[in-house]
Image 1 (cartoon, rainbow, N blue to C red):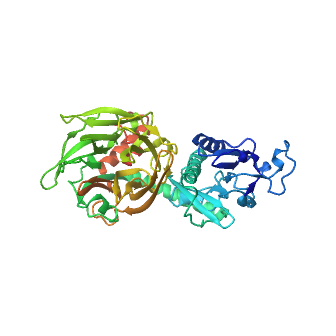
Image 2: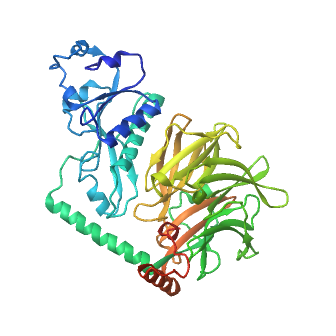
Image 3: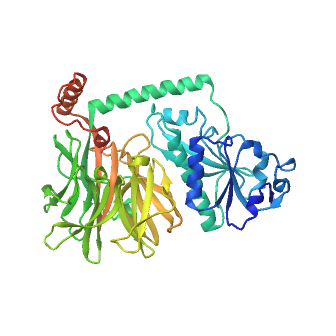
Length: 518
């Protein structure tokens, strides 16, 4: 294997050549380069297209050093322009890599991703490898985006850099990219008619989403399933016994059964008018009829949800979502039943649905960073001690996928494998549950794959969503939703919007759009 990059002769396990549009690359290209340089997973060589002459015709280098072909272990040539001559594919071990959509349009193209956003699939970004034998799909990132949403290219750059970093870490950890399927896409630029059709479809979908969000409200319920967690993740559909009845002013969601207590559940109580949640404790009677036993004081301000419960060394711990305060705090229950803050896990991070689990002698904190998207990214921290110090994972974000990223409940070991449940949010919040198998989990490299799913389809009471499934001994706790017309809330929305239009004081705080999705 020979190449045109004398810089690659320096001893280094991985060497990546990144081709950018010019000597002064676009801002998003620069951010990709900086992310890969900061990750430390490889040595980076940056070249503009005019410096990428085909091998065999390379002449006249100004310093003379580039005129010879030097044996060098170039791992991959990353073509951010989408225009590099494909003859280069034989001059890197893993070929020429490109970031593109399903039609092969490169990141940065003005029509990139129009089709998938219009069809309700959001952002679909693929990392493909052009090799002598074929074109392979290395990895895919999927991001949540509404049909008419203008996606900043900077956000796509973060997703693209994450794909590249993950692939390089896999090569370094495993020695190569194994088991990749042939890429089924083809490079076809959309016609003007196709673009018009997609934009029309996107406008129609956007209007339908806005109308549905205005007229209907998401009402969640908590339920029990008489299955173990490992049985439930293989069930596809669950025989849920829904607890209680629907309430006009609030609803319950994000339930977690208290370990060792078969009659006590922590969950979020969401005020439907204010759009704010708090943590409450439910008590079940002998017939599993719930009653609210009062709020849970975790000493945190603002909207609270997802009270993830677990035991360690005999003590009960809770880490709840408190993204409004931009702090993620670990609480421990004292002997009197109250809660004490014992560690700050994350500071100045809007982390949602934090989840803690143990693996290979370490504690792992999994969460979604709202700054990169509400529904489609996974970040990790790890620590040798539960109380810290906690270190961010070098690969963060470790995954982008609107169909299997944001946490949905427990992480459980099954026959030596770690299974975690995640939310399906392809075209909306909390549609269903994906089951992921954690394949690799070290401080340097994380990889998981989706191996199943659980759908609410067919459920009589709550067929529109399922987004929490937590382990509770020989049974599990879930929640589900149904979109319902709520006359009182609709009137509140009408009055609030009219007051805003007339610049009058609103009657009460209007629910935020993000909170209403809860």
